[in-house]
Amino acid sequence: MQIEIKNLETLQPAAREFIDQMSDRTVFAFYGGMGAGKTTFIKAVCKELGVTETVASPTFAIINEYKGENGEPIYHFDFYRIHKLEEVFDFGYEDYLYSGHTCFIEWPELVEQILPENTVKLSIRETDSGSRIIECIS
Image: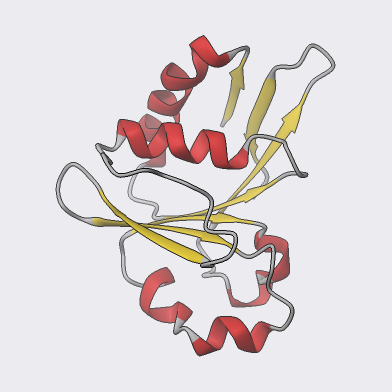
């Protein structure tokens, strides 16, 4: 999988393309530096999945839960502020990551050892022209 987002006008079509390629996979880990576009892309995907609530990075909450078009939960994690893996154990990560519901994870490198084996790992990077490339790295 490789998706290019040339500008904001191509963001929603890129999100639809991503959804078309999700298949039955549910856990998606987004790797990329600060400002790479992880949250922006996850917002676009959530919009395409029918989320009507405000989608924001759960930097301080660690996890946000949204409802998709079908009423199913969508979980959005941001592990940027995790200092110890025990913090993830404390909120019962298994209940979310192994629920069978869609999970989007920002800053997964901080919790890689607890990610499910079938996690789809994706890289988001900015090109010299300012576009973003999203590609599967697993």
